[in-house]
Amino acid sequence: MKTETIDYQIMWNRLIAVVEEQATTLIRTAFSTSVREAGDLSAGLFDLRGRMMAQAVTGTPGHVNAMAESVLHFVAEIGQENIYEGDVYLTNDPWKGTGHLHDVTVVSPVFRGGVHVGYFASTAHVVDIGGRGFGPDAGDVHEEGLLIPITKFAERGEVSEIVLKFIRANVRAPDAVVGDLYSLAACNEAGDRRLQEMLNEFQIDDLEGLSDFIIDTSRSATRACINALPDGAYRNDMHVDGYDIPVHMKVALHIDGDRLVADFAGTSGMSAFGVNVPMVYTRAYACYGLKCAIAPEVPNNTGSLEPFEITAPEGCILNASRPAPVSVRHVLGHLVPDVALGALHKCMPGTVPAEGASALWNIQISARPVQPDQGFESAEMLLFNSGGAGARPSLDGLSATAFPSGVKTMSIEATEHVGPIVVWRKDLRGGSGGAGAHRGGLGQTIEIEPRDGYEFYFNAMFDRVENPARGRDGGGPGAPGSVALADGTVLRSKGRQKVPSGSRLVLGLPGGGGYGDPGKRSRDLVKADLEAGYITPQQARADYRLEEHELGERDR
Image 1 (cartoon, rainbow, N blue to C red):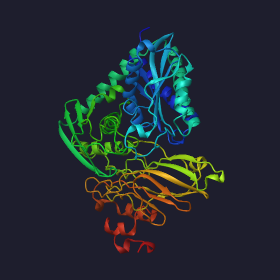
Image 2 (image 1 turned 90 degrees about the vertical axis):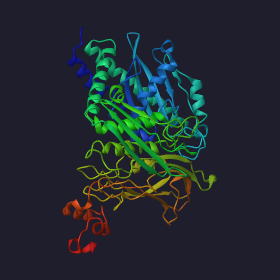
Image 3 (image 1 turned 180 degrees about the vertical axis):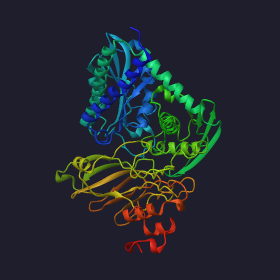
Image 4 (image 1 turned 90 degrees about the horizontal axis):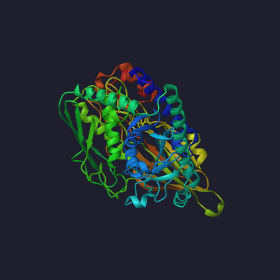
């Protein structure tokens, strides 16, 4: 049967539903709250050569785009002669997976009529991987936890008991971690079932023709978008907090016809702490930021990613080499799009947003009973939180929104259910958005207290405390972040710290930068912001030049 272009187009659209059901299965069966509540995962279909054909809408760029690279490692290391129906493979190798040990990638080969035709793959953040836990304090990757090389979780449908024993013996929450591994395998199986139904319907027995159509079409469309840009070299740099010393991030975009190279030469060297970023993760987020601006309508797959060439000197903090600690690689990795988009702004003015908080303000909490003999249980919890996004050329920035990661926060109810903490406050942080014709998005204020009889340690992994998000085209910076106890004691923005029983941790999440001259903002919008508590009376006067008679009685 000859397959026509229209058939391929219909199948392409159907594949999105297939991989979205794959992702939904993972969310419904996962043990980790970061997967169930926040969607910190990825799911996708790959052809026989390991090329990504389709990705689920649910998921993060750091997982999806990194997984597009990591499946190629599975194909090379397992070897075609060792691939059997019913196999399941896994790894959490930061340099062959998605950048740190807490992410486990699971790959399952797809067979049709006894013939190997492709792969399903998925990734999820597991609650614990041993070692120091999810935080930046380790001196190398060996301290950070258990590294699982590319290996078979199951062969011909039989799960490896040896692999399970090794994992259980090295993690703090063995039932949850092993449960998540089964969830990852189950979601790949769900994708396989739906794919087989689609292939039956269209009466085809392999993916090669469809894969070539998807990847070739996407590659051509993306190159056409790049070719429409003016040739040249465009540069940008940005200072961020780092751990013990500030980090300088630098990029040069070289555009020549339909070729684009983003070179991060000049970026700071590796850190002694876990804020280093493997190249796979830098490439994932650089590609994402550039593609969002240049080719947003082209579906995400190997073809649409290939035209973006991302380079960084080996040994710099954005191309960390083994055995560097990389546990919180997301902190700098989430800032990579801001760096790249700042350079692209000089090529595509009026397109990209101002800088935002960008990096998630994740909190890993280890709650412990004050008196161990009280019979209380310890608990490990992970909370995702987001600051404000940068203002856009024609719109205000989104408040408390995870860009570029796209993950959701966990609900307070779900978080309090899994551990002995009380979240007393979680609301928008008034005055944190940068001034501009379009205002930056607001951060949040969050207060967390251990329950009676408990204390907790938390791993801080926060940025934009010393270096807030910058505005664009005359817009003002967002407010910097802050980390403290309720009594005013200032805490560090990175590293393991203690919150004693009876104390509260207070986080002030950073805001996004503003866009354009604040003097051009509509007076009605300024007054509405003031009424809603988004800006302070002082900001209304100083940044927007609101006169006293324009202020309400409450704000004078």
